Image (cartoon, rainbow, N blue to C red; front, side):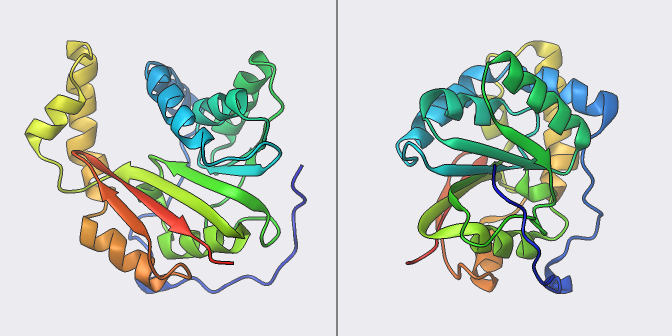
Length: 232
């Protein structure tokens, strides 16, 4: 278990805060989301295999906003590491712990705010955040917290949606899904998710204002991967 640490709170950068209040999914909404994302289990397995090469056995890994815990569970199956998950939703924390228990894995899923983490400085060897950063109401504070709890010489990865995806790119991304599932997902992408997502310029500017100062931003058809490194 990673011990929680008392530390002075950092004043949030209000200019970098988003206009809506970031709230976790709770109750039946979280349960619905867990059922929907369970259909993407193969995607979680592929990503876990990619990330496994960046994670040493015995290391401590944090997933921010793990939701139902599918990615953390797949990582823990591949690498003998200490997995920790911090999510603002108590419903997701419960579901993730139940899923880890069913898989026979000891993963510490617990409630936590990405912009105010209760972990010691330099605690983690690797940090990942998938499909959640766009929802953070204090994104700059979250980046600075990632920097704080990441060990020197270690990496963090943020994977999320890009704001300027095209209709054709989205159709390709949804290929193979059922008609109803694809239609519902398209509506969610084009309304709620697009509004919260970042452009390439927007995420790059945010990183430049953070303690990381710079990152390796890799764009794809509907999203991006942002690799961040904390120097020794």
